[in-house]
Image 1 (cartoon, rainbow, N blue to C red):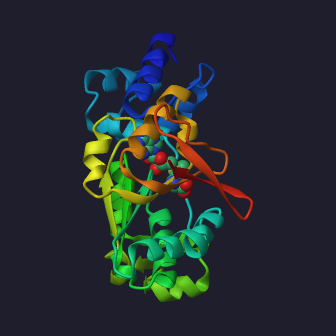
Image 2: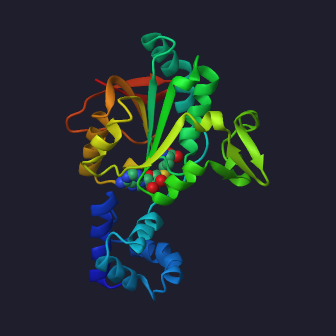
Image 3: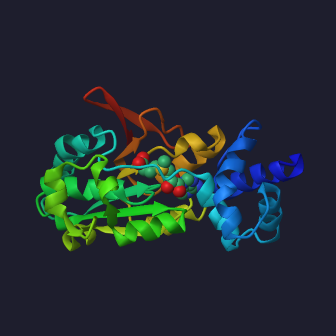
Length: 273
Ligand SMILES: C[S@@+](CC[C@H](N)C(=O)[O-])C[C@H]1O[C@@H](n2cnc3c(N)ncnc32)[C@H](O)[C@@H]1O
């Protein structure tokens, strides 16, 4: 790739979604844009960069952002966050809010919705009156949000992490795929939201404030500075004492927000001070 086009790509990805791409990652752009070349009738990664430069808000730009991020996710990923909901957080919230108080949960960077579904299934099985649990799933990717809204997963996708008991209880078979049942779907709402935009707080706050936020396996893509801003934006959408659940290796280091570490079965969760 030409150095100037690569630099432009780096700066575009950083500015739009906070993706920090190191100088030795040219190969990543080249391999990820391969799929876009045919679809947009372009010759190579340099041509993609030039076309995006001409229209940073067009379809190609959006497809490029999608192609450069990973949507990797699965049901009940890492397990312990869902056990923490069931054994510690939901009982605490039910005690604090009574049997009817609303419980708001946000899956920030929800990808194709498996995390939000896993939260909804856990709530259905462990919260008295689960209809009062509202789950917001957000992602910057329009494709991921559409997929999550549809709530139809392939056999391969449900085989990744979903116990058969939950599959049969919460999904209807549609040919070779599985569709989320209406009662589970009613607990979830999916919307676009970009974690690095200042408008995030205003956009997401109207669904909150949140008692629990899942923000997993996305902070690693941001620079330390951007990560701190993202954490503070999220904290502004939470109740004091609300739980923040990060990826196993991620910590919520905000500039203004402060967190208490809470251990659950040897794993760290965070509580907003
Ligand atoms: C690896 S997936 C993680 C999904 C889920 N949280 C999990 O742990 O299984 C990362 C997601 O973050 C989203 N993402 C990346 N940058 C983002 C940003 N700036 N704002 C919102 N979502 C973003 C990607 O589109 C992708 O769906």
